[in-house]
Image 1 (cartoon, rainbow, N blue to C red):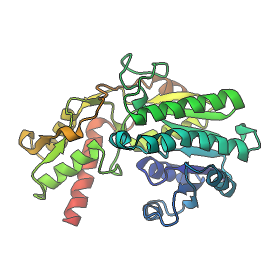
Image 2 (image 1 turned 90 degrees about the horizontal axis):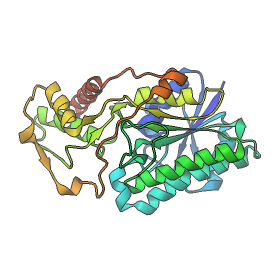
Image 3 (image 1 turned 30 degrees about the horizontal axis):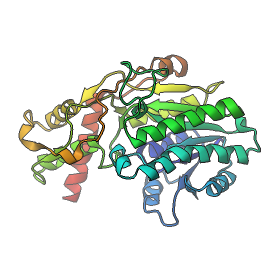
Image 4 (image 1 turned 60 degrees about the horizontal axis):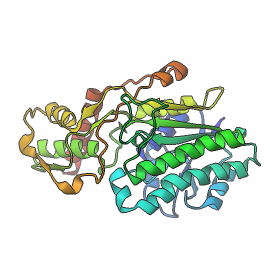
Length: 326
């Protein structure tokens, strides 16, 4: 039975990955910060066979202890201060967790393995936000980075630290440069879930509007359940490498609104959507779209859920949740 340790186990990616690995026969350990973390209950409900271990990406000794408990063959580092908008307000914390946290996890593996880092395969959750003010479209593994947020900057640090440990210490370390991926498990603060939940509440008569920021930004949106499959496939290769994971199709926030409102029979949403400058980013990323040809060719990875199916899935989920709650 293979053993895996997942940081960020309480997020959407962590939950989907834990389900995937469990189905493949892994013994799965999830790293959770704090003694009484309320999010642990979510993990226990959705993936009850996951074994919780304590640890914190800001504390190296706790990460070494977690590795000693889990004794994993694979480590998936998904934890981060992941809401981009928050990173401007908490830039130092974002750098400490999202950036330096990667270094601490890699260093913990180096210490735990006695320097033979090939014993533990490591996955780092890199991000399309690293491309930021893009230099070319679509973005591929060799596209230069130009991050436009503290979050993006921290992810670039973590990405290059992963490459450095691979080249310096012989670590089996991969980075997945994942473009936006969503699901019914996405947090309410993210624009996709904010839209789908808002549409559900409007349809049910529980709200009369949604307040958003920039409606013109374009993103390459896929399904989180598909993307964790790519993470696993990266760690099954003979040699470690970095891969873009994306759908290759970009949609604007307006497209998202069209799809979500259209699904509940509202064709003209203009009267339901308000804009507020408070939700505008200080430095916007206008257009992200990835080319996952390398992942398709080398990993055999393909998406199974397209944009329309994703939005439908999320709206239906929120209709059910809001009807039950309201």
